[in-house]
Structures are given as structure tokens and as C-alpha cells.
Image 1 (cartoon, rainbow, N blue to C red):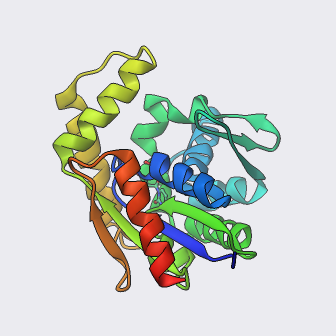
Image 2: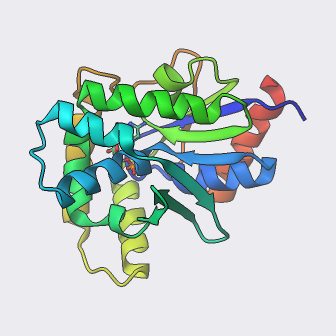
Length: 222
Ligand code: C5P
């Protein structure tokens, strides 16, 4: 089959990573979670106690990071310079600071260049906020995944409970709304629907239905 690329964008908790991973598996493509890359940079910044507004230093750190992603049956592992940081990057501290790091233009330049390189040979399903608009504007298939805040917060609650982490729905709704606001209002590469993207509202849909929807789009577009 011809190697094309699929760009999946959307707000926090819209189901992008699960859907992108399963779509990649069905097509035998590589899944690239760009949010994990912004999270890994944030984790390193917190670990080194670098001020969140030290743009130049954070961009240098991002440039030195070598990312590799490995998809397993249950999820995706991310390694930075050979170290498995899969668990660390999902911490509350990283989640609450990642949007601040992701709005720094020089950091985005560094990560976008790395992401473009990863997708250069095709055969990639990439998810994030700016994939269809900025990272892969030529992607053959572009999807904007959305769902109501209520539904997105409920999904996060289930995910966290499954991992034994206690939290409540209202808190998750506030956290998701705050991240949505920064991600969609920032001046550099805000979350936007690409002109040629198809919006899929996943509220009330099963993961399998969403994956089938994207596979159908792939068949018609390629
Ligand atoms: O996808 P996930 O929720 O893990 O992304 C974490 C954060 O990384 C987002 O809230 C956003 O601030 C940032 N991000 C981004 N551009 C991307 C992917 C993620 O700005 N392509």
C-alpha cells in the first residue's frame, strides 16, 4: 500500500491517542504522539528546575533530546535519550505545566522539525494540536477529533481510576478547560481545524467506530 500520513488533532481528552494508536495498528503504520514529546520536555524542565519562561534554555534542552516511541499492545512507551519516561510524563505536575512550555515558539520550532523528520518517509499516524495545520500540512488524511468537555473529563476519570489515581470529575473538567483555553488561544500554532480536515465528534461513539470512520476516510482519500 502507498505510504501516506494521517494527522489527528483535537483538544485534551478527545481520545486522540487511543484512536491514533489503533488506526496505526490497523494500517501497520507508526504512531507518533507529539503531546508526549511536549510532556517529556516539560518533565525535564521541572526536573532541572528551569524557569518556565526561560525559552532559550528550554529550546536547547528540547534540541538535545532524542525521542523514540514504541507501541505495545496496551499503549505507547516513550524513551528520551534511551530512558523510559512513559509514567513520569503523565504526572499532575507535568500536565499542569505542559501548555506553558508548549506555547514557547522556539521550543515548538525544535519539536516540529523533529516531528517532520519522523514523518518524512510516510506511513505515520501523528496526533497533537497543530499536525494538520503546521507539522504535516500535506498529510493526505486530516481529522479533528472533538467531544464535549463532560465526556472528555469522564474518559480521563476512568483512565485515572484504572491506574488507581483518585481525582474528581469537576477538577478534571477545570483542568481540561484551562488547557483548552491556553492551547486554542496561544499566538503560535493554536489548536485550529485545518481547512481540509474532517471533524469527527466522538461524543457517544465507541473507539472502534471512530477508528472505522478514519479508516473509511483513508480509503476515500488515498
Ligand atoms: O496530547 P496531550 O494532551 O498529551 O498534550 C499535552 C500538551 O502538549 C497539550 O495540552 C498542548 O499544550 C501540547 N501540545 C501541543 N502541540 C502538539 C501536541 C501537544 O502544543 N502537537
